Length: 303
Ligand SMILES: CCCCC/C=C/C(=O)SCCNC(=O)CCNC(=O)[C@H](O)C(C)(C)COP(=O)(O)OP(=O)(O)OC[C@H]1O[C@@H](n2cnc3c(N)ncnc32)[C@H](O)[C@@H]1OP(=O)(O)O
Image (cartoon, rainbow, N blue to C red; front, side, top):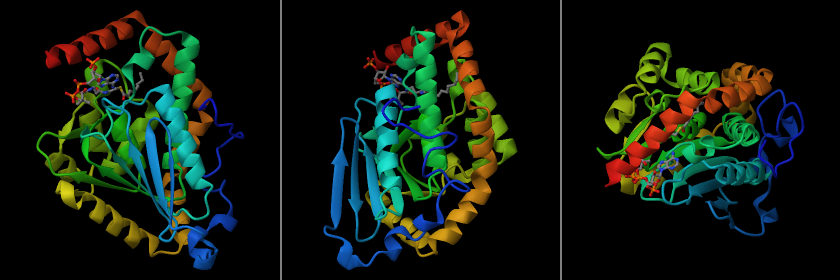
């Protein structure tokens, strides 16, 4: 669990039905504008900036953790706290996630968190990764990933967990679940999230080969829903959110829940087992060696 986010068992608040409360449906839509004192609320920490426009109910979250927005334990903790704040804010109905770092959406899980650490640390880290996914995949907000850079592995998972993905047209950007290239294996809930987006056959091939798809290909296989020039990204994300928010919240949320519940429930039922599996797997000498070689390769590529 994210260390500073106390969460009740069995499921964090905001996770979709049957856990969320009907009283929350409608959120900002039910609030008379006169009750809203300001139009824009901002909160920020070292790694993430959030701006909530209370008149539209749309929050924009920007990852700002140089050099590559890697998902460290600290980052994941801040991410979970930000998601919880928005989920509990009745003025917020939708979230756009994007990056403030040029050319990178997120480089995925921070490899240094999975290398040379104690088993306790691995367990804490993995619980935070699970928590992030539970909150985002199970969010009752409309969520749109505005992907303005490369997005391997855990970065791709964040995008996959949203309701809609828009990626910037750029031949240098790639996205995918490339874990196999690192000699590691994406867990079943990464796989399920991927399969639910692109279908079984595409997911199977892409996962086995650890493919990082260029933007056009990602669009063709349905990994991203739309491709736009950089300067149109925010405008397009806002238009998509407006389209999704035009629906009654309760109908959209119940439909989202119906589509995602089985995968969320499966993970929750196997959460502790999944942590133990991760710890056992990542602690193996052979896996530590693979990660070390991969980091070396990244460094060599630079020089
Ligand atoms: C066992 C259960 C399965 C667990 C599931 C795992 C999920 C994951 O997410 S594993 C992580 C997968 N991520 C990657 O494979 C991405 C690796 N990184 C890259 O491909 C590139 O760095 C890039 C495309 C994201 C950015 O390229 P570029 O702009 O050229 O920047 P550099 O490669 O020079 O990187 C700068 C700096 O950042 C370090 N770094 C990059 N990615 C990570 C990372 N995921 N974790 C930790 N550190 C990372 C990189 O080593 C450089 O460091 P310095 O050399 O010290 O500057």
